[in-house]
Image (tube, rainbow, N blue to C red; front, side, top):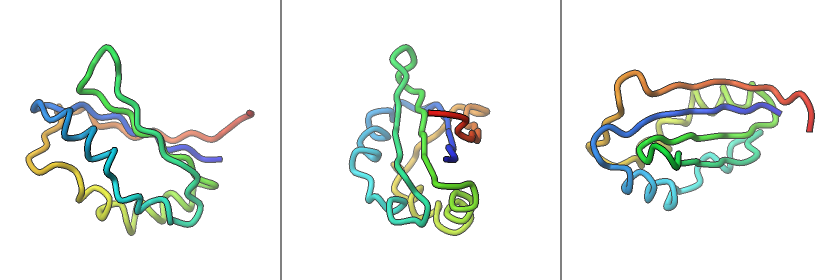
Length: 98
């Protein structure tokens, strides 16, 4: 199992629109080879902060999707969305045990 964890903070008061975009997402990534599931978390103590966790069968599947298809999914984010500079971060994890 491979996990990609993305974190970002909305800068311009569009938190509700970002939440709505995730709730209404077109599930494009769901059909990607090796995709397992996606979770979107919103920090209780920092409403503008989001954590996106995607689970993959393996790392090459994630990188294939990220290289060739991620722009399709990101195109659905609200127009005018601004992020806090330096807040966007992506980290990668391998499962050790369950």
